[in-house]
Length: 239
Image (cartoon, rainbow, N blue to C red; front, side, top):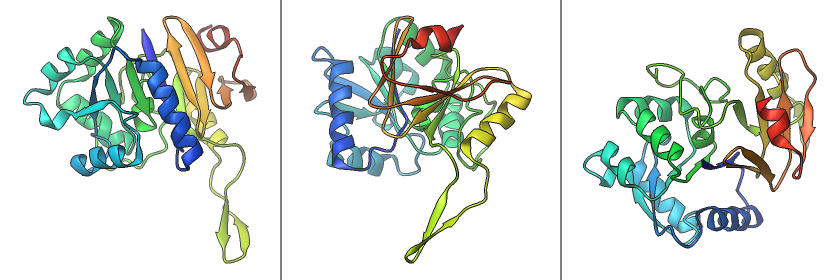
């Protein structure tokens, strides 16, 4: 199984260059066309055009799944899949509505490479329950692809948010990401990996590697553990 999962936060040129580099390294030269799934955003065509404009295609031909008459057949015939970010509730809803959960899961299990960014990373987990997104639509269930045996919280950051008002920064007193993950563990037991901005998690068979940044590991009843590139992730993530 080959899976590349990005947290998001690739807003500056340095991070976009890193994104393109990791995408090229992951898909390689044998892949020519990638099936892109834009369901996390409302305007699918504008989404695809924005990816090309900002270089998030990394030189590959991205085929929007909307251009395919049969979405399931498109998955069955795809060389590789890239699932973009946006709203995870909307993405999950449409993956379920078009019957794509099992076909994607089966193809990835057979070796087709899967890349996700933000919401596309969230749906690679067993469920979408550790998303940060607003529930704008009701999916059939929270169950998603299960390409990894733990949860991810994309765009994870440490500590409290501070909001800029003019020249001052004012503390925002909403829950921190760590507090929200603790709420998840009050009702659920799967480990949660808080994937920091601009960071990728690579899965190659049963091995996991952090690329470009750190991540925070949360287990029910345990303190947050900071993980760095080069850490033995397989031992701590799947034990």
